[in-house]
Length: 566
Ligand code: ISL
Ligand code: CA
Image (cartoon, rainbow, N blue to C red; front, side):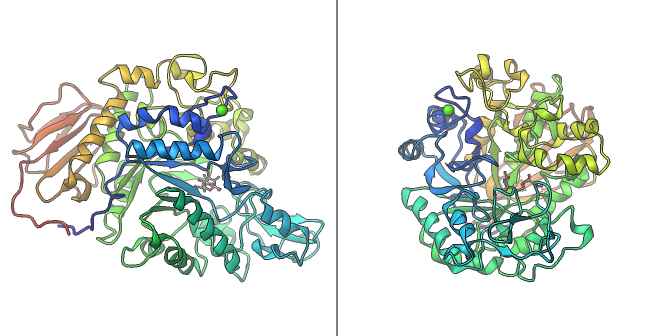
């Protein structure tokens, strides 16, 4: 039996909002804070505990806010600080906590620090960023690539040096070796915590410590530089300092975006006996089968193996669970089946998977109504800097535009960023203006919040029910995870064994009916919820028939001989 220490963030269900695409309140085609405020009742009804807001700070939007110009101001298009405060107050009134996005591996090149830094070699801000001479004229300091295409070094003619940017060239990396930079970051954190936010999602946090030898990375790592970038020597020292200086003084929840980390690094970052972060987002599940912009085949046993690794972290680590965010395609299109026949059933199955695993679940806007990928028909429809920045490289590498388009239809970040589908009105009710900043998915007349709310059997209500079940069951939150059948290629069957109850979850993740042999003592189990109306209340034989994408959760009778949680 496990001995997890109880905390509020382990018991929370988190919902991520990408403000640009959530709800536009003034008709300019861009989502905003008033838009979010107008939907808080909806979020409260869904039953979420924590809201994670993607960057809301002043930004020139080269990477939709992940390029911050001023950490102490709200993005003009999103609203004002007053509106932020109002949103926070309304959230608190609804019992919803708020975590914000801390993007401090880099800033915008329009940030005052960078403008100063660039202005001359002896400017006091020069060392806020990473400047280096080229190896020779016209050749950057090393071969480090940017995730958004080309070299990670940008030449600055005026000062005769290159600056480092792991992402776009308008996203220069901060120099965390400089203690003043770290102090600035801690000040920013205090400012928002003192306002009342409850924590942070930390953008590409493992990248903050740079290898100071600045050596070339091996050729075979060039397609995946994240593994090198995430292995800087001072990461844990910096996180420990941040925790000591800031986090330890507040009751917060922190989740680091752990891009490129090893298992060992994850262990160190999230060990409750150390003082770094509470949780991290791992990339294995979300990026299963991914090879940069390509999506390859993957199998259910491979997916289960990843859940198993996450659950084996031990009692001093707490995982996160998520299928969607603003950087990934829609889960029902990737792990489910988004054809009209199975979309709703498979979206509900994924809801059950997400909400009955061990770890804090993170939902992403639109997931709760089963929103799907967008049917892109040409390369110029993409908005994302990741696509635009890499297009030349991809086509030069020999891929045809058709192939690139076909793969982007499975992998692009823009699938997650199309506007939230609220109703059947123009722009899906996202905006009352002429045009939304990114096209609305043409399926909005079928897939939208209004029709979900009106139908008690909808994907939305299924999420709501599961959130409710989870909230009322400590055992489902803290109970042990056991994969009953790791090798089965269609059925994902597992238990969550708590102090008083054991839950049995059976998911048929395939398009075919499966006659499944239950390898479990099931006599005392009763059905709690399923996504197919004909599911029997009790398991009565050794073999059960699971319909395509059928998902069931059973609950045991109370068990009396188990020890309490700490
Ligand atoms: O995998 C990726 C790069 O190949 C991206 O999807 C993503 O850039 C990566 O996961 C890091 O993500 C975070 O930092 C980026 C920002 O563009 C993403 O939106 C953010 O989530 C730079 O801040
Ligand atoms: Ca707006």
